[in-house]
Length: 212
Image (cartoon, rainbow, N blue to C red; front, side, top):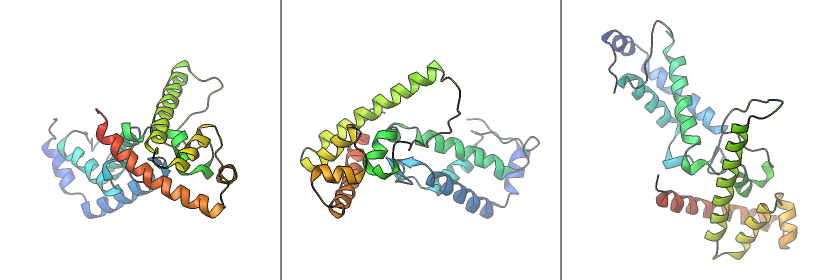
């Protein structure tokens, strides 16, 4: 682990840390709220992390020298800390237990439609690069595998299994699924709530069994 110079430490020690911590936690909270976690916008984050955890980890990395703050190049420490928080959130949102992406978002929030991947900024190009196409194909494969695993996990609740099957068949609107099941809209709402609870159970099991 890299050490920090006495000059840098002196600059850090003079910072208004109470203000920085509050502002940084708020920044992390707002950023996390825009993303999809475990298939839900602003859902529960991996390992129970909260916005304050990202803020404190960023500060720890700067103080330990793991992330090098150059006062002369970037005298605004808060601006630099935001970039560290961005990196931490990006790593978390792309981690193993948050990689289910679009299809699994539809399971838990079908009303959002197909365009739900906000885990990274996407730049538009006239023609997609081959490596980007391969990456998207891999993401789709992982999503399908996890979604199918979730369906198998619901073997004790055939109705919920059927909901997942419909979504895999691109039936994503709650009203259409309710009609196919022959249930009321209120009953469909209750099924979605139950599905969300079972999803949390499944993710806990999948995370514990992951070799990573």
